[in-house]
View 1: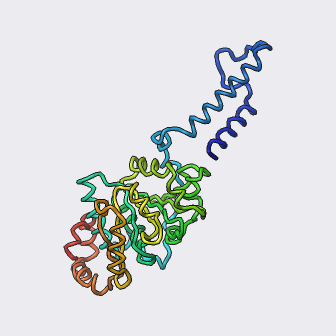
View 2: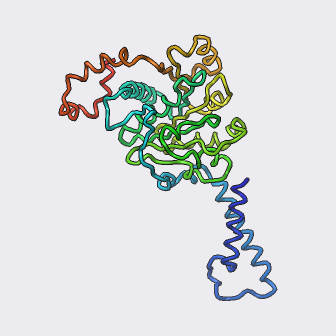
View 3: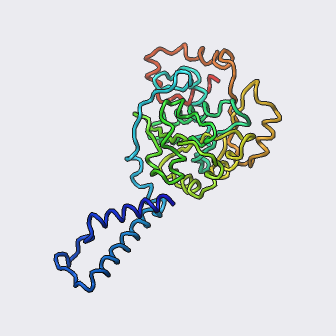
Length: 319
């Protein structure tokens, strides 16, 4: 309701600064004194109707021109975040996320998948690490507009990984305090947009139940090819289960040596299995995972890399 109040307040201010209202064919001809009150009332009613139409505009109208208003920020990842970097295409774990990207884009070519929740059975299994790196890898493809949303309102971390402000963000938008474009940032020089969690709230699940969440997730694919959501763990909050019902698919992140079979089973049971796009295994030892990959790329000189740029999808042959 705060959006309605804001719009009405702007209408009142407009009337105060321009009591005569918009110009018309009869401007310059003062109304008869007897009709002066009726004219003011009519202008006030028109201003209120305009304000209400602005607030309750269709999602399509509100999306128009949105991306041009988004603030740009530099890519300054936290040194401890282990995020992939387009300037260093052969550093771990870039190749694994390219493989994940390739598989997801293939699935997208077979069915309309544009929104995906990234979650895990329990905390500290690497879901945020996977969500941010997947979004970065998608955004490395030319023209592949990608939006990363931090829906973990309980313990958000995306803003820390990217070293940006937590607020304004999603919770601020859902509470009607800001416009949608103000909740976003664009990573400079990339196709990646980010929506941090926003200010702390005491009722995250109630906020996620707002109709505005569904409307937003339904219409964001009009602007973005991929909308990737980082969410709380499945077995510790109902948030991820709710978000999974609003998105096209779910990616489950598990960690070697930490996630138990029982946790995976219970997490899968809590989801609609047809909605699970796949499982990402985190925490493999680098020596095991990248020995063949390093061997494969040792045959390429920097010149060869330039010649093969754009053909990184063939790299899964290196396992």
